[in-house]
Length: 177
Image 1 (cartoon, rainbow, N blue to C red):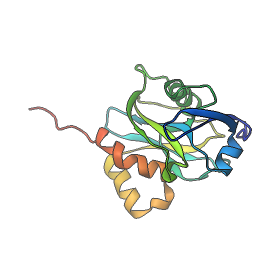
Image 2: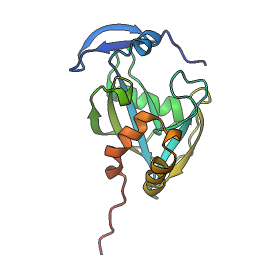
Image 3: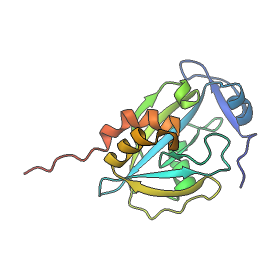
């Protein structure tokens, strides 16, 4: 299934209110504000699952990104998109719904996307959608932090921006004595 550049997105204003709808290709070409979700899946070992984007992606092919991420389709809401993207991209149906962490305003770093970021608890194994994802793996917070310092070009710009704020939600808590 190739990426559908004619897929409709809601175009939104600076307050994230819908002002119209346009095809994906136009929204990206004209750098219009639209909506997306990013999900970060954590396991019991305190690792975060990241995926390497397929070379078929229209934006940032071949770089590493959040566990699952995707655009909010026209008429869809953030929470429904989060559940859909998690299942479509990595075949994950967690026991508990994704937990909203924070929302990012549309900006250059996110490709003019308003983004809700979610945390998900899951162990895998995952079934990766080949058209979307080349491969995936588990990483510790320390490994991700080091990667962003040593080889930031290997990570999607939106992920790098999101991780700066999300990482605190994945740092292992000290065990009570």
